[in-house]
Image 1 (cartoon, protein in one colour):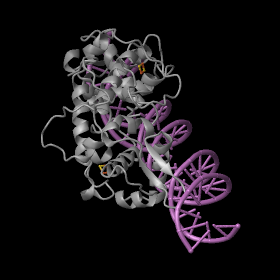
Image 2 (cartoon, rainbow over the protein chains, first blue to last red):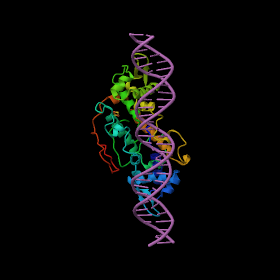
Image 3 (cartoon, chains in turn blue, brown, green, yellow):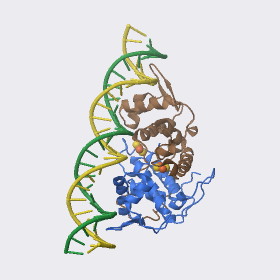
Image 4 (tube, rainbow over the protein chains, first blue to last red):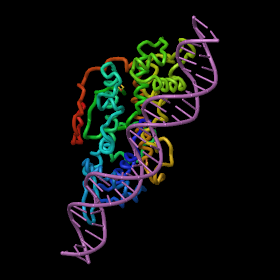
Length: 156
Length: 156
DNA sequence: TTTATATAGAATCAATTTAGTCCTATATGT
DNA sequence: ACATATAGGACTAAATTGATTCTATATAAA
Ligand code: FES
Ligand code: FES
């Protein structure tokens, strides 16, 4: 598990679809049709993405949405951030006060460390990557160019 | 987001607690008290962990639970596997048939790749690690209010 | 200016999932 | 026997999520 909501999944599909033609303005209806979800649902997702500045929106006739930045500058982590609250594996890693015995619980720090490691992975994956075919059996090595950092929370 | 259920969180806390004294047999009541959750809840978690062979259980008077293996041989990924279904970020990465247009959706493979990367991170983290103090590095970041910037979320 | 088209945003409703509890059966030490 | 503990499943309540609907606003074109 460790699941993303279905809306986030759809949102990513939509974003990836848009990434194929970065300049193009897509209407909600157009995108709903393209990815196969109901219009109201696509609409809701798009509104959120626009509010979070991952998309630009154009109102009125012939309006629609387009990517706010080039595909390679939008990471999966950013999409997740936009569609699901703050990034974090447990509630307690995001906000305090949930540990039954808070002060005694030595685990929060560890969860936060895990968060950073996972986030780093997802920050290294861009929309552009999602449009490429998956290299068969190859481990990922690319890092998004907006975040090129090493040697922090070593796991691998 | 990308959240683990609260039960899994508790489960990890319990396992980490037990990891401090690997040979010791803990009763459910004892553990419930130690980590501060209600007995029925702790009990439910422990039963699951035992069924999934991460714990051994001893029935009868003076019974209880103990780690099935040394702490360094139990990873966080294993605990997650035990307490939450199959490991996967989206439904479609685990089981087919959820993509609205399945065959056209090029994203499933990518999710699966992401799954592998995340799993690898969580497989490299053991119960033993969770009992160590977090290697100091960066101070805890307070997530006070909404962060509007998309680049460099500043974990460094 | 009017009309058709589109998004903004909030509110709502239904369905699903999760958390938490309870009950009965079984095993074991004293 | 009896007290203590886990096994396993059933059950309830609460929270979350998914999906829809409604009103308001912006813009292009007739
Ligand atoms: S319960 Fe989550 S860190 Fe303590
Ligand atoms: S909808 Fe999840 S991969 Fe297509």
